[in-house]
Length: 170
Ligand code: SF4
Ligand code: SF4
Image (cartoon, rainbow, N blue to C red; front, side, top):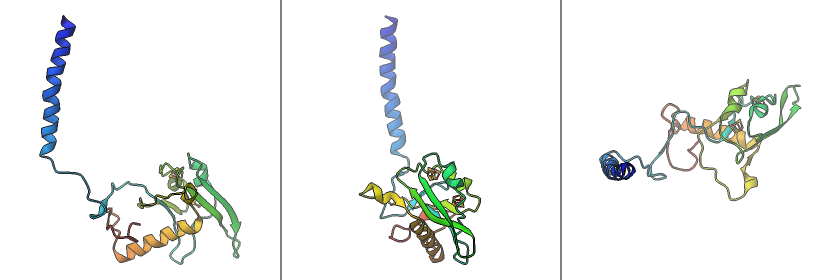
């Protein structure tokens, strides 16, 4: 008998509780974003597609030390070093398989040169899995696009709000 009373009480309490939650949300401001017609907004610590940075003179910052690959829990960074004409160590190959990446950010934390960074690009869906491998050239190009966006004022790092037109997401 006691069990029956408890069950009936929980049923009768659950209904007004559920309705109260519904009514509470009826008068709250909507959080649906009308993307892509309206700009997408990101949390300040959002991590998206990677990019490889350059020095102001255009030189690549990556010295192919491999620390990012060691730190990566998904084992999705592959690189091969080489020496350039000045005898400096640079990356001959640098690839990230973005489909394996979990966007944890360990690679950028591990990098002593601030060379590998996670940006804010989120629109990089592909039809073929092999197209998710970003090469060194593509990662450097991401940085160039980012710089271009900054120069045009499309990217406001503090606000993390991007316009919806193509070419401006980085
Ligand atoms: S964000 Fe994490 S999973 Fe992705 S490449 Fe960097 S370390 Fe690996
Ligand atoms: S991105 Fe940074 S950590 Fe990774 S190989 Fe280049 S310099 Fe080393």
